Image (cartoon, rainbow, N blue to C red; front, side):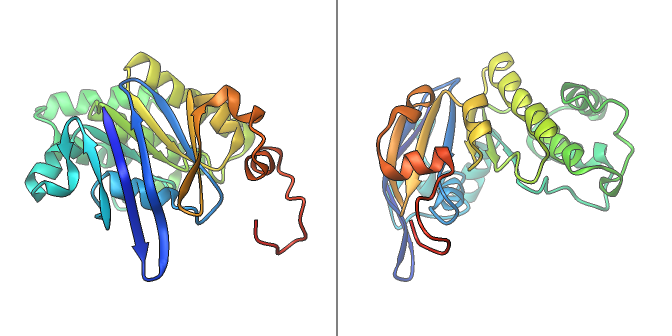
Length: 249
């Protein structure tokens, strides 16, 4: 279980996270949404220990992240698979070697078991036979799927996605969304999806948290968010700004 308690983070006079509190239960799929600059990525970095909050707490399986040593934090991170917006592949390594990096560092699998897991993970994302390709030979959608294969290869308890469908065409977006649902259901992985794309929100998330100006303005079931009468929430999900171009919401 993940517990976020009264989390605050500022950069100078800019308070990016303001008293953020929520829980994630095992097996849940949760979308963190909001406009650009509302603190989504900063929240994610605090959750995985890449940033320390100014105040408040992040608990993962009853461990307070900010109190852990580097070695202890690395152990907690073995429970978390990360899918980055760009795919974050090493261009000098083959697809198989990219996936194998995490297996070498975060598992006790032997060489043959690692090779089997690489092939299995690629099969899970429908990329059989690509293990010897270089990232430059892949399309954007394929790179995203390799990123997912790398994340699931370590069999994490938690799977975090940072803008997983940004920049993809509608067909590839649908493929990625279905993979997110697949792994959440088949492996009971607790999924956190940072996104601003409404299709992804409704396709994959059971629960939604919406941020604005560093605060939570919605925390509830996905299928009920369209019923919410808060003006900003309505505009976000209808795409209607109701303002002049250049205005600040």
